[in-house]
Image (cartoon, rainbow, N blue to C red):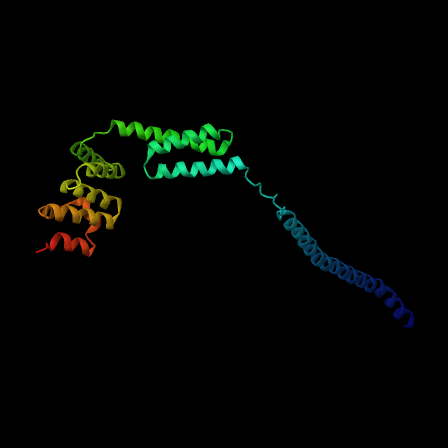
Length: 231
């Protein structure tokens, strides 16, 4: 009986050894898997940080700003004087000043280029002025045409020119009021309308239904002017 028991024990020993070896292999594989899980994210995170740092722009110190020369400063001042005349509609004087600017400071390229542009515009405006009608009635008719075409800025200019020739013409003040209302200049439109109604009160009937004055209808001053005539 002792020999049989010993033989059986020897037969079971290889199975136990194999089981232990398999268990060790599984533990080793699990350890490797855990190691991969912990190492890989750290590597990826490091790579992402490196990529972000590489994308950050390198801020360079800007070079010191160059100071304008004496000619550049003088040219800019001359341009500003000429431009002031231009913006006030004094195109003849603006033309003369831009010409003088180009004669004296043509080498100041940036200012000279702008001066040439404004000189061309001033000369074009002067040519247009020479072709405009001279009398108030013709200017008024031209203003009405521009108003009906939707060219409100041009219409305003025509009516203003007409008023310089006939400042007491009620119909011209009324046309200017309608144009300014179309432009959205409510206060100026009401001033022109009041002047027109002072000169010719029966224009109130027209003003009550005039589509050109629609933008004024919500203003209480319009109601007083048009629907509450003065005694």
